[in-house]
Amino acid sequence: MSTGWLERCGSLIAAGGLIWGVKRATENFTTLANLALPTGGPLELCAIGVLIWLYAKYRRSVVAH
Image (cartoon, rainbow, N blue to C red; front, side, top):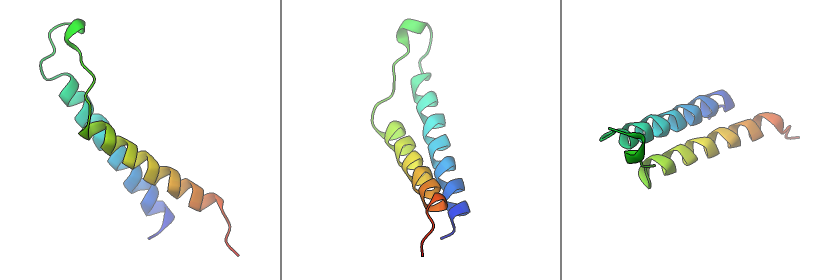
């Protein structure tokens, strides 16, 4: 798996988690007092995407001999 592909995949997964989290946070949004941060699924998906992206950046920076 190439490093560029891992970077793209990780950033898309993280973006999907953010989009899902905003959707869940604003489903019943009427006032700022009703805004609740989502727990579980969206945040975990975003964290997995960030970890994949960081791993790809690490792979790009390390030169294996």
